[in-house]
Image 1 (cartoon, rainbow, N blue to C red):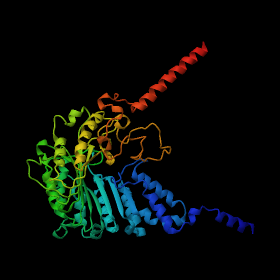
Image 2: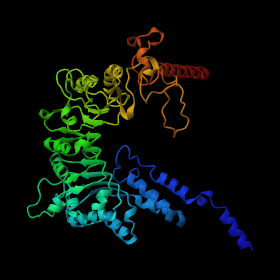
Image 3: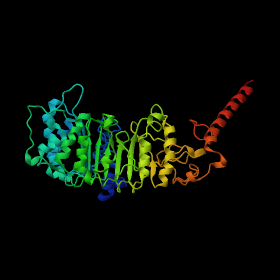
Image 4: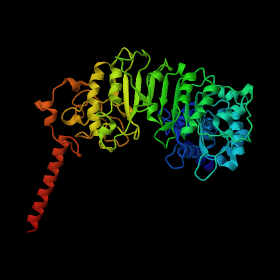
Length: 516
């Protein structure tokens, strides 16, 4: 009797979360599983470290499997939903597990970035093809094989992602039809071994992606961009909306020797694109092309991301091009600011001013709403910040003055994360942007990362809708009469800082008198 009572008491003391309905518990676990991933920004990198997406995903799944049998069974779709691979051994073990358990259809997102050594070529090709055959419901396939290393030989051309897809077709046709997002590497050998024979027949020379919406092509070497020729000739993508051509994550941009391969890809797939990102530069500055050469191949483009050194703006008053009625956002990577703002070219180079003048022509861009400026070398560093490089301060001051003219034409100039750029207003608000420190810290919760609202007078003298441009400086003080720039912060913060130092020195003097 006592044993029964004890058992009843223990069972009733279980946490209430164990009795949550399966549907609700699954939603909670799904939210927790994707908490550490922000796929709206970029693909998770494949690296070894406690902060990598792969490590966080592994820790979560291991912890989930150890809770109880009910949770383990319920979370099975989450365990297989998104997989990360960064070693050949992991790939082999994964394939064996999927074959034994029959869980291939549960895999929807595949992320791989791994080094392939020459002795493992055959194993790699065999198991990567088998992975695509088993995961016929995959929606994301982000796969970058690294086969160039200072101390190893190049692997054969058949290990190129496009080549092994062509070789495996039509056995992977159902997987290709299911894909919505594809990331591939173009870093293939410059020349195919002469003793290799092509395995691609006439019937398999095309890869049809019926539902593919987003394609990212990554190249680690300028010559490897030639791999775009296979994308141009072998990919059939009737639903493609977004195209990105970029360098690996550890490189700032991709240097391209021959623009022909890029334009061929745009000629094949540009007609339906709504978003295009070209993270590249020409090896020779004489190859610089007009931005209209891209826009003419992408008539439905709504968002364009390029570097200001790769494509030149056109003069809307002297050159008859366009109109481009669908373009709404233009993102420019500008460089470089390390030495001085003059390197950026506001005085000696007209690249960026020419872009502003081109954008102001509403005849060519009637729907343009936003121009975003990013540092090509430090894309995550806001131009309005007071961190390195120091020339950002002068750059922001100059560029933001142009924002008023753009705003009058319905175009918003923005910084990192869409922060609006505006002229430096007087007093406290002249340190514009997210890094302004107010007199009172309203964020008592260290986990609260939200920004102050536009209506908070403690942080702003005007609203975010450029009201400071039409208002007069406070107390009739002009911008030229304001205090000098200080590392401490605004003038009010400087006064508090000086007062604190004065009081501190006074206390020290009183202490000395008491000792005497």
